[in-house]
Image (cartoon, rainbow, N blue to C red; front, side, top):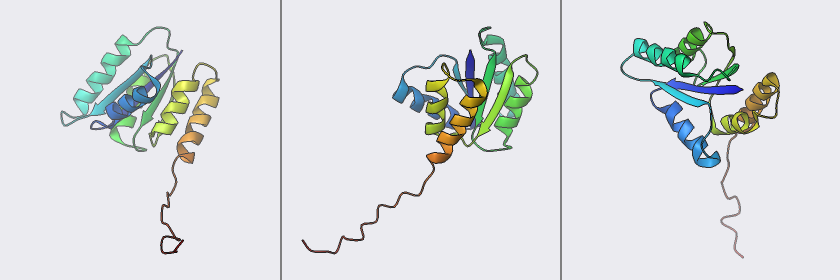
Length: 139
């Protein structure tokens, strides 16, 4: 079974979890932890508590963080690297990425799920041009 952990600065991870579950319903083995003003020590305590609570059925974990090399991601990776789980970490958390990963995790191999999640995340980033060039034309 594949677990997904969202980590971020402040409440972004919690908000993304809420958004995913708004769109796709409650998700089993989806977790969120935010680095709050209480600091790194408190954040790491939450991570270690999650390690203890994880289902023994989870063999692989995808950690999705907000920005590359940020404290939430690097600390989460550090804590979970000390477990027996197979871990992958992605940055650039967005809703398209998370939906792809979460809704397809039952039917895909772990590494393919990672690749498809990254692809979905990248493809969802675009410049939306709503300018109406013909706005001044008369009918």
